[in-house]
Image (tube, rainbow over the protein chains, first blue to last red):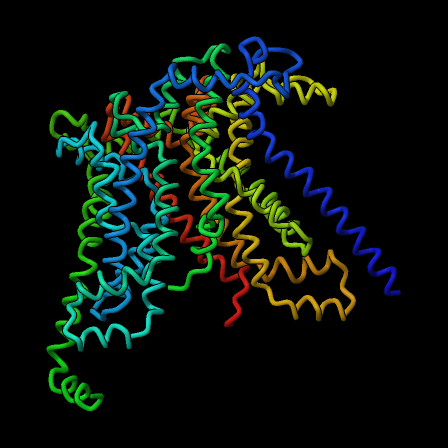
Length: 282
Length: 305
């Protein structure tokens, strides 16, 4: 009886593992193909049957890619935008979250509900008015449309920090008040240093968000010199649709993807944004 | 010390409350300003622009309902609605199904299972632009590796991307590669189901299939609702894949709603007409979310009730 039970368990586990391995191969194959294509010669790119393991790997493609498109420039732009965006969010979201978490004022819970619902708001309905607004500000072809809103807080990050601040014992802040600390002092000297784990999560989320962003830079930036990697690569793809360039496109994509994959593998637990939202209780 | 504090609190009760409230408003004020400038305000502008002719150069000209009347007889509008509904249906249906199956698989207690979880989530960290370029290459109608694999299985080539028939399925396929997030949310839902429920079922002699249909799925309905709402809202706004891979073609067969709005707004600079289109989508999504939430009372299991 017991024996047959363990045996059926072994069988079912084996089936599960086989299924998992098949699915994993399907999911990983595109990334393998990206890497493989990036190391091919022009001839191999269009060969039939396709070459799976290019020998010898053309590492030179990567150097050629860097010369072929202004990759360094795009990369620098992305890093600049991302840095300002992340810093803006860190400051504004801790500030706003402190207000939502530690003070009572009329309408607070209603406002928080509004804040939460903006997370679901389709971007499209604000995009055209924002374009008009930024145009009037003279912000088209500057980084302001991508970075300035970050200094006013983003719903998801505010939500994360607010949940954390609610769990900070009041004794700590009360003691600081008695010692004559102002509320701004409490925010900056006590709450912000306490929230390092949440801040780490926000850095990763925000970095990923801006690294990924395509639509906003597409609309608000048009000078090639200013483009981030996402739109830069798109532009590069558009100008080089013939088969001769796919290995360069793949090499550029590998370089574009690599930072995100590395961050992901080292900080996996922070990535699962949706889980945080799905489990939320307002 | 404690007594002293109590005394002072009682003495300044009202002023402290007011002061507290003012501080609270002070701290949330950046968000309030940001909300009115970048979120709430623009909605009202979009509604207003929807009633005008506007090219961002001259002043908006009031047209009343004319934009909306034109939209109703605009064949491209209807085409984009059809394409989008097609995408939403197949994207959401397959995504929910596959991610639930994968979540069930990676929920099993096998050593090293986290490697599989990581693998299935990995495509989510690949930026959308890179995903699009990569899949454009994989599905390339002449040199794409997918067609080669199909040939290996003795199946004929498929003219992905470049034919009216296959442009939408191509985009659906690409979008399904990124189901990691939905899967992980399902996984979290599965893990929140208490172990005792399963043990009780085992004692009653229920087989795996009954457990799945009678226990797991009913207890998972809150997560299903969440994933459904999020997926539908996102699917309706599909943009980048099609913009990069097919550019809405061929013959507008993959012209999704967002692409049409984008084209009207930032290619032809018909900002008024495009705003009206955006307002229609926004209204539909709000209505849809509302209806789904209302209906959820009937099919979602809530513990507290």
